[in-house]
Length: 548
Image 1 (tube, rainbow, N blue to C red):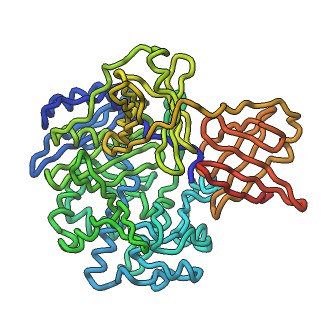
Image 2 (image 1 turned 120 degrees about the horizontal axis):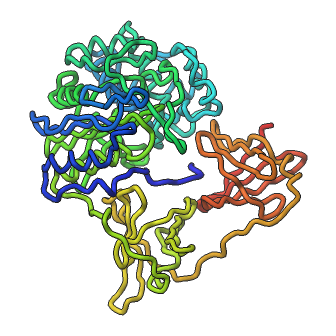
Image 3 (image 1 turned 90 degrees about the vertical axis):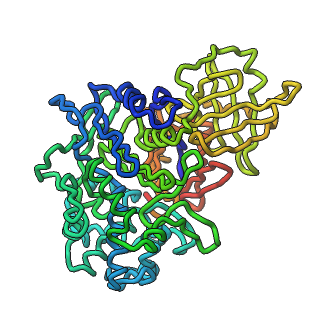
């Protein structure tokens, strides 16, 4: 559950490549425009078959010294590390040192029974139900501490499962942390030593490392964040991401890695294909994830990929089998443009199926022309999207989602800022609005039928005695490891869910409050001397008891 839904922010409308496939000079020119030379940037590789078409750095690796990124710059790769962890497990499986169906308590001790019965395969494909430690309360406050794997395990090992193993998919760092411990148990080596000796060294990956902050690493990039101004990213002990995201690499080394995977250097063709096959849940539903790789498509072509995000760095690695095309984008900042979308645009252009170019298109605000589009659009039985005008802007909001401003680029087409997503208002021959055709990420199409021009009345805050806020402040448990914290700052009340942004909530009454940024409402309840709240979002009522 998320209080605030958002499309991936990425400054890509300027990244409009040539319509001609494989025009590398045009891609390079657009990337130079996208990544300014006075701010953090990225290193990017485009490789097709045996030919490296582009391998280059953009922007700065270090702002303090004005050092530019280049093709050899070393980045934290975040969760791309999961590919290496998955292959290490599969190597040990093929050596008959473990089975994917094994219970994890064969290798990791002192687990509660429900967790102990989880299988290795369920760790690989994120269907274990084990809570992700990076989403647990207070994890951010202790991420700077060096901890052994056993010490880190103690942080989450007793947490109740979030669902029956195999029944759902939920991306999970705890699962890959446990896989690292299993690699150590079975191999008799540390996770770091196993990866270096069995993968990095045989491949000649001389720009790849386990991430030790104290170790001197040639060409290592500095990670940055942007909060009104550029600043160094928060410190994180790399003992904590461990097998879920602790590795460093360069774009060239990652190309060596993907070549080795695709030539079955470490695991057999059959096992590789299984790793690149969608997971099937216990109810028969398919999930777009295998073992350490996410599985989707770009402009109709199969994509095998994975992204990563870790303090100061966002990364993406993508392979298109049909074209033997590999694109990796490693960035040393957590601001736009997002590497996932940059890589996606590059791949689409290389396929000769570029995304629509909207960067140079704009339609002046015309309230009279836009008014017929205003109203609600039905997505499905439980969700609608409303489109409305405010000031000189056009805005949209999905049920349970955040309000987003969109830009009009032609008579009936609107694009989301810094995104590939857009929608077109559909009309019949008489000019009557019939619906909205949405293209999420520029690819997936979804039609929402027009329900009419009537919009719900916007909620308005009322004046109340803010002394009541003191009785509401506290921590409320929405779910295991998911807390909604209510806090006060002067005459304002705020709510912050685990791992999410703090947002102000506004009073409808002394016990009822709403968000302006997202379609959600909170009702505070007291019964038999016990306090709780009910969060209403997306048609669901979620009760949370007060913890303190």
